[in-house]
Image (tube, rainbow, N blue to C red; front, side):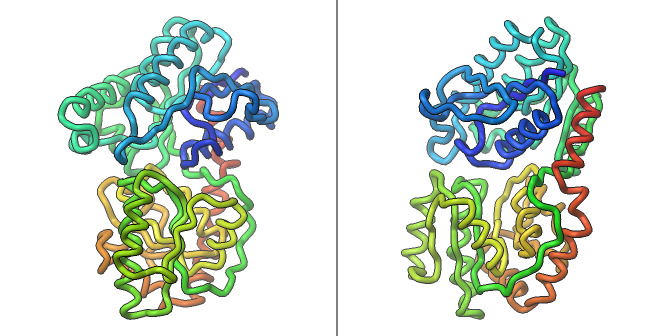
Length: 378
């Protein structure tokens, strides 16, 4: 079976949950003996192409900056969708399965190529955005176009994969009539029960610095929490268009020495910081899954999330077992949750480790691979 994975970025040249899903999936499929092609944009020097054992990487153009003014650039997504469609229309007969994300033009183009070549089409619906969210994100004109494209994509003939109950419900309620498979395991790390370490009084943020992640809420939350727990500090890892605003908040609140923002660092350093931290602080308003929540639990570290209409990551939290969900991303609500983690102490870390041990099989990529292969085979 020849499988073509289609996504505009490749981990680690761009870091995000979807990139890690497709990279890990490509590696696992190749290791299982399948022929795998990864169709993407080039984000590396031409003379230094990435090497993934058993995976053929095909680029359909250069990779430009994905974000401008804090928002994802629609032009890049449209350009990739057009180029990927051209490739699939020309070479689609080479593939038995084409597996892509629901980036509207890409999914629509893949559907057109499927009608010509007959491959099985699988589409990942990481998120199903509401009309109101599209309008708020892209404005009244582009938002309506994107909303219409999303609706049209749902009418194409494909097998759908979702990663949360929230977006499974939205996809079905929006009128999709094909088969839906919910995948709960994107975690590719070790599944042995973690041994929790004694925590340092540091909350860790891991992720892109973009508006929907609400990373700028971290410094005010720490400042408020320090009024009750003055020992609390934070480390904000990652980068993105909101990074200057994060640094400005740290300075405005006088948190130099209490909150550090080292940017992008080696994975080993991030892993060590997460294992030693009091908690993962992730106030994002929009998540299709929330892989970082599982990774924190795998380290024996509880989490603090913020409730939001589009945040599916809260499905991965059992209140008081592996963390807490704050009522909002306000400084007051996040600070209260941080203090609850501090006060819960070692028993919360132990229950977090136990939660991961109990759910590791369900949340592992190995289990998901079996379900993905079942989708491929129809």
